[in-house]
Amino acid sequence: MRVWFSNTPSGANEMLPRPPLAPQISTTSPCFIAAPFFDAGRPYDALGQLSLRHWRASYGGALRIAWNLATIVTVDYGLSSEDTGLYINFNHIF
Image (cartoon, rainbow, N blue to C red):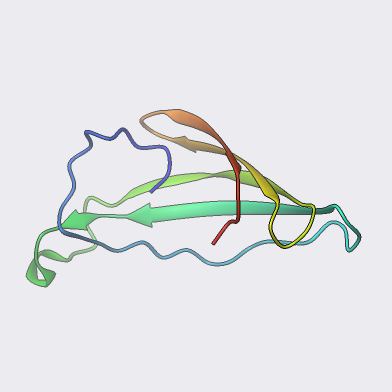
């Protein structure tokens, strides 16, 4: 999940439903894509521990600028109850 400290308790498994929401702003090169996101999850060690309690959520938005298939710049800004984060990445998004 985005916007959670690296020392946040975690387990061997996580459940992270993420609906794909990415409206494209432009169809020319460079292409601008706005991508809002909502992440929710809960770490657990075994499937028997999976429950709907103690889930955490984060949300935010991203701007993706694609020059071509190989050059993609992503700028994500996320918020959670624990912190905020700004992530800038220069590579292919997959």
